[in-house]
Length: 299
Image 1 (cartoon, rainbow, N blue to C red):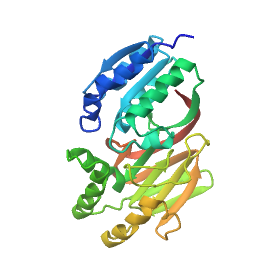
Image 2 (cartoon, rainbow, N blue to C red):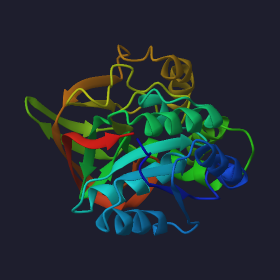
Image 3 (cartoon, rainbow, N blue to C red):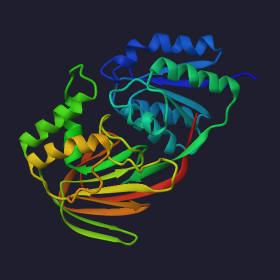
């Protein structure tokens, strides 16, 4: 059976340029496996999403992204905003690769490309995962409001070749600038919470920032999102919590609350920073979050 036509989307700047440097080898792997390939490159924010949506609207059924979590975010929004159905594959070439970890994809980009090409040739069925949506934007791995959004914004400004450590560096920079604790009102089925908070993290997958095991109980196919609320904390306390956040041993700490939710409304007392899959969003004051079960097919 012939492999289907694959539309490969690649952002050459993803992973601080790693995706671009690996482009030729990724294409070679697919072509050597006799997978029909059409390459699309993009280096402007939002362009990959628009290109993916256009191809999905035109009937593309197999879309593969070579990139990091930002590229996955754009691809997911392109697919989900299309009226057609397309399945998503990934060759992880980013910095954190949180989505790849959540899906149990190989983090070795060459190995991941070979495995994906082999699955396509074998005609293996796609599996489905849940997708989150916040204020009409989709996320595959997680959303954050407050401190982690600030950290994400700072991390994306660094161009240092230090991998996941860029997020750790951004945390210390964010603490130096000051830790905001806006008042948040959170409402969900059986949950009502009101008070100042360092952050509210909504997880579909277990990892954020590459190295932080924020929601070890999260699975992107279980029909729920994992909500983590952090009370106001000092700089010293954040430093003390970091090792536990990395190992997933923080859940029972007194400053943290955990709830499993499918729908959630968050209202802040002023416009606050937020992110979706590591992509910083415009300042907003009200957030409507919901889970779409089995909404995306994976290759």
